[in-house]
Amino acid sequence: MQIHQLKSKIQSKKKKRIGRGGKRGTYSGKGIKGQRSRSGSGGKGLSEKGRNSWVKRFPKLGGFQSVKPDNIIVKTSVLNQKFKSDETVSPESLLKKSIISKPKRKHTGAVQQVKILFDQDLAKKLIIKNCLLSKSASNSVKKAGGQLTQEPASKKPLPRSKKTS
Image 1 (tube, rainbow, N blue to C red):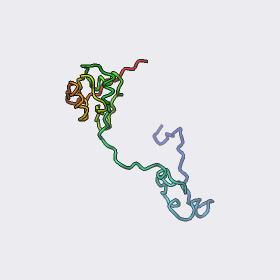
Image 2 (tube, rainbow, N blue to C red):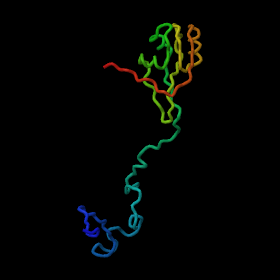
Image 3 (tube, helix red, strand yellow):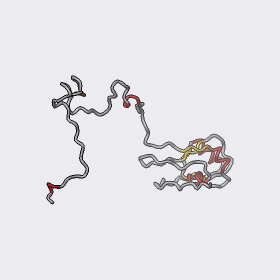
Image 4 (cartoon, rainbow, N blue to C red):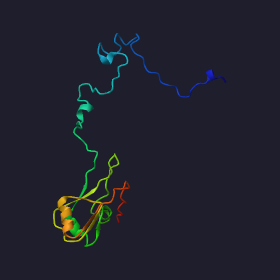
């Protein structure tokens, strides 16, 4: 058997070439003039022949999307309810007590940070680690006799919360 004797089991279907004479008439079913009558016209499929195209139907996404993730907000009243005196408040402890959900990562790799906002004076002495605080919240912590410690942010994600079901 020679290479010129090989034949494929699957026959390839040839594209029908129109407009070469024959029984289809002068314009071969393509009409008279216009872009769609020319050879090689296929376009990008954006035209829907009179109907509003899908490109125009979808809303345009304008504006600005920040690369910096939003902070996870925790109020001081929640800290009053959920923590005992001399306990440490950190993103890990907030996650364990299911006050916050797992911080999300943006596509840039930046992780959400926990920010404590003031809405009620703290009645307990708390040690706060690795959390951002508003001025009034930090004043409230200091007034209650608590401590503020800020460690350098690590790139490791927080451990997942264990849900009991």
